Amino acid sequence: MTQDLVTVTIDGLQVQVPKGTSIIEAAKQAGVLVPHYCYHPSLPSPAVCRMCLVEVEKAPKLMPACVTTVAEGQVVHTDSAQARKARTGVLEFLLINHPLDCPICDQAGECELQDYVFQEGQAGTRYGDYAKRYNPVEEFGPDVLYVANRCILCTRCVRFMDDVAGAPVLNVSERGDRAHIGIDEGQLLDHPWAGNVVDLCPVGSLISRDFLHKARAWDLDKTASVCTGCSQGCNVTLDTRDNLVVRIRPRANLEVNRHFICDTGRMNYRWMNRGDRIEAPLAREGGHHVATDWEPALARLGGLARKGGSVVLLASAGASVEALTQLRALAGQGRVTAAVQVPLAEQEEPLQGVSGLALRKERAPNADGARLVGYGTDWAGAVRAAAGADLVLLLDVTLTDAEAALVGGAAAVVVLGTTLAQVLPVAELVLPVTTVAEESGTFVNRDLRVQRFQQARTAPGMARPAWWVAAGAAGADLGSAAEAFAAAAATVPALGGVTYADLGLNGRAVQSPGRRADGVPA
Image (cartoon, rainbow, N blue to C red):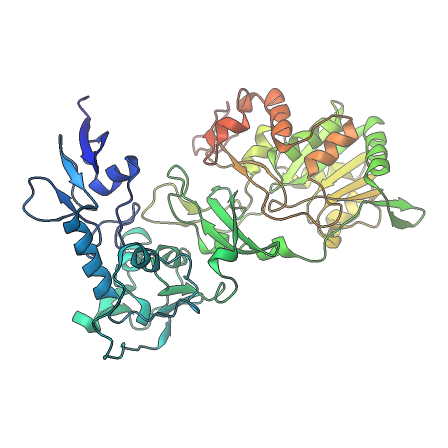
């Protein structure tokens, strides 16, 4: 045993954990799940639900695992007859009034009450002759509904708004069996991070109006991804059904966003389902664009790039590291001007209780990745340079009319885009590329953390990742996003030695010279 570790035995499994660790977290490290409702690793623990009671040898009574810290030599039994009897009693108590409306509840399939009752609840009820209480559904905010009938008063939502969001608008009103979650008079649950109460609710009491009745939990495919709403790089899960993204939820990463995402990021998915997508390569023949195959399109793009001269790259800061790197390689080593388009908000929206977590001013996920691979942020200057360039490559950008007029002055324009709105009449080629939901790749967040996102839905028509298009035109043989990232790591010093395997699903921080004092690379 080291000075900072203690050894405990949980259900016969010996584990060493740091001093001060709660039994419930120590059990996790031993591979044992202690049932719980009120406990959440990112919230203060009040020990109100009594679901995590465990037997600790030499203790006079059952102990709540969420607030009891481990001690050297401690022996814990989470599944003893006494502990199981206590949990069965808690479940029976919760089901006295909880409606069994699982067939219509949005939480069905993700409900912890449902799971634990199935696991160790009792088969019948002793309250069969009494009607369950009924309370009307309340609107707490623009997207949050409160179904009081289902509430088990775990108070996670109250503690989140009090201790994490810093906006104490929720409370426990009334007492005893009349107690329910209340909202302060004249208040709305419209805080920029309020949607997290839906994720925190272990039952179907707080629900999202946006997701209401959209899908059953077991119908959803879940894919690890990264939020594209700003430069924070929050880890998220894209839930898809029938090849449509129907929900974005936070994915735990203690280094980036803990267990939370803002409401802006949460609602930032509808554009991923747009139907007006470019589905085939278009080549300009005479005064019109005609559909063509990838082989002649790539050959034509490669021919334009090999002519040399001045090349201007105008790219979205929502493009992946792989795409930006391959597009930069396609432009060659001549007179190249490369810039990314970074939408800026007027202010940030921090989450008060989590240091370093905010909805950032830079509303793009990969602005720092673009800087690392050699793109500038002088967007206006790059657009002016495009007016007289020999070749302009546009990667998924939106231009104003004035910018489009300047770009139209180039000798040749090639658009790598997703929607028809981005098509320029003067473009030599219009090439369909995939979105973040349709490909795998990496972003670099504001803290220079390289993070992977994975493909969640199939691409429309003949759309391909932008890195595949650029690499194909340059004659490079890249077959996967991992190979494209390896090619980037070979040329970008900050990414040197980093592989997809290193990144895992939570990413890895890299170092870069020239970092400004505020944490943003120069």
